[in-house]
Image (cartoon, rainbow, N blue to C red; front, side, top):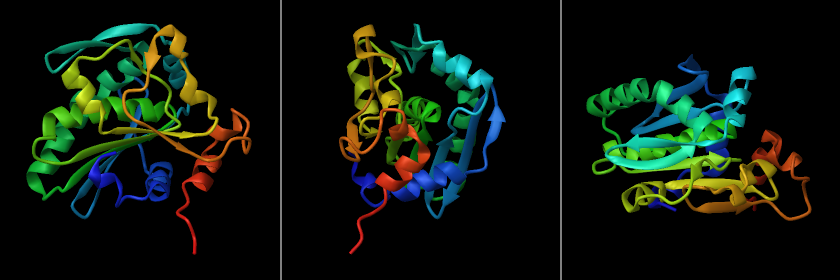
Length: 214
């Protein structure tokens, strides 16, 4: 994980993601942009309606032209991201230009985690040379199909996939269909504590990301 991940507790990031006030835009895209001191946070909401589920289940891959490179992405998630990419890029650019910024964090849960992954890649290309960028996808489904160009793979190295063992959503779409996680996988929780479905509940992520006591 990137150096800037260690001073941002997972529990606090997840709580902020769950409690953010989201803007509904594009193709059922829900996002929030918040500034805490010198850090900028992009939050992406979980599935909260029929259109979200339609996009979730639209999993054939589609070519994505991103910053001069072509690679393949889950079609439904790509549709959502592309529908708000321009307005998010503009808002972040304005914020970074007007305020001191020491980090950009892209954070999402479930459906929103996949969008946060695509946002991380984009933010890293646009701002990574000047501002540290890091992403966190809690309960993130797979959204990349096949291999990635080296430059794109490097940008995804800043995106951390948080899996609560044995969260079924983090195993979908299946690996055998060619789908991959973009960044490093960070496992939390314990085997046998949850069913594959219960492990995905937000309450489970809140519990398993609590910082140790004592």
